[in-house]
Length: 378
Image 1 (cartoon, rainbow, N blue to C red):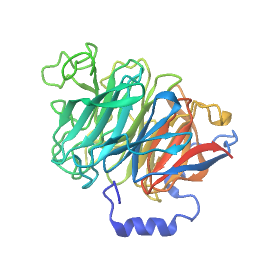
Image 2 (image 1 turned 135 degrees about the vertical axis):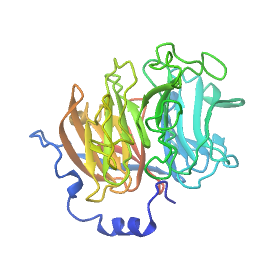
Image 3 (image 1 turned 45 degrees about the vertical axis):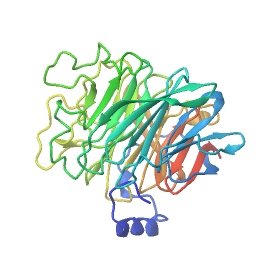
């Protein structure tokens, strides 16, 4: 089962050549003399097409399965589903249960999924004593999707306590409706809302477009094609986004913790640092901090996290990410929003669909085929 738009023939070819030498996709990455930390992937469990995850109460890790179930990983392994919406969602195209998140006090649990009509939906549940209360379910936000791909779907609470929601440009190819640069739609955007401040939610007063009658108040940043996994650095509060490219360039975007929002990451005028199909670079374009091309095995970036765990001291402060087609786990060293070095960590997570950051900062890797790995010291 594939979550990305990619022909089976191409995927088969990728699998056959995956054991070849390092690809040209990363040939131009910055090099640095620092020794690459030695890591290993420890398989901790198997799930049914794991698609997303979140740190849960009591040191647990909650795993979303694409068809619509959520299960809890603890010291005893992966438990039975604590939530099942399989009758309410579809896995056509790139759809399904695509994101889960807790608020800071673990008082509410949020799910991001595409319903049977293909509409992106964010629902909320109250949590009591670490358990979901199904009777408290309510819908927070919905967004109609014109196509079954580029739905985005990741959700996270930021350091400010607000809920951030990533939505792709609506799909097809080349952003045919111009959603990426259109501030009058939620598609192709990173949203910022306060689900506790109103019904169904409130708009934070300092959102960047609240005074613009031609823009949606929910928008925090725009110019995104398919922001497939974003995260906040637990140490600095900085925002990092993995945005999937069209056909040539994959990119990672960055914003500092003191950003006031409003960043334009360029799509569909730009693909990475490059004009897309004769596009003109917007005057306010915020270029990616890192990009790589598709001349090798990479085809779809999977954004990750800045490592803040204790198990691998040499990895601390580095941004860990991967690619759905390549599967290699990689890391970027960054200073003040600039990449100072890039590393191949020497391990492969398969078809890496997502990363999960546990409560103590350790990272997990989800392979859509079923494996759940923890990144450990070698």
